[in-house]
Image (cartoon, rainbow, N blue to C red; front, side, top):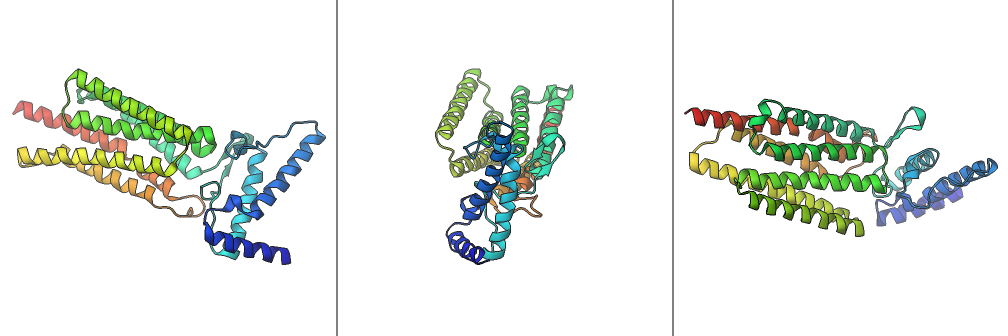
Length: 324
């Protein structure tokens, strides 16, 4: 009892200095070391090699029997922090989540984000099918939008994998594909809304975007700067919105009105901005399931459908203009 009080006092003082120190706390590391020692002894009796990797970001920590060790110690630490220090700590830069334990040793670390990522994947796939349909043939810059949906499929597949098994490899898959998704929409906005038709200009612009993408990936492989990556993604999203807004302003200046498809574009921009704002928030998961990032994934589910409605609206508007 006395040792627990001393430890609680230590946690309170240290916790006030940094509110995401769960994985650095004494209670967590002692609990984890004890659990790993028990696993090692059990495996030694069976003449088996130790399983839990030295690196905290290795894939082995997402699997049995190492994951339950870290998971159970995490909740013991959370309980002590909340009761003695008055706040919930983060672990390895993330909030604690209630994991889903399925059959055959399956562990889903962040169930809500996985479900919402799958929903996004389904919507992007539906958009791809529509673009390849007879109606989609008439969409302006159709091939570019098809490329965008393929990147989206890769992005949401990576997101599903990452939120199921959080390790260094799956994290990079998620971050790098998401950046490609954001960058591709900015690329489309410049070509689509600025009406760039010259093939040479399109090619040069595309090469520039590809070079910028790989330069970012290279720098992130040297150092995973999460704040820089988030700032860059939000900046590019803001520039994409600005390009579309300038297009709408010019449309209104020339025509003295906005078409139905223009209002659909405004709706997409407002919805996307609202969804992106969730990424700025940061709070402990509600019911240990729904954090701001998972809610961001939920909010992005309708976006492919909204883009499709805008593209179809553009086709309908162009046909009406030609008939007139």
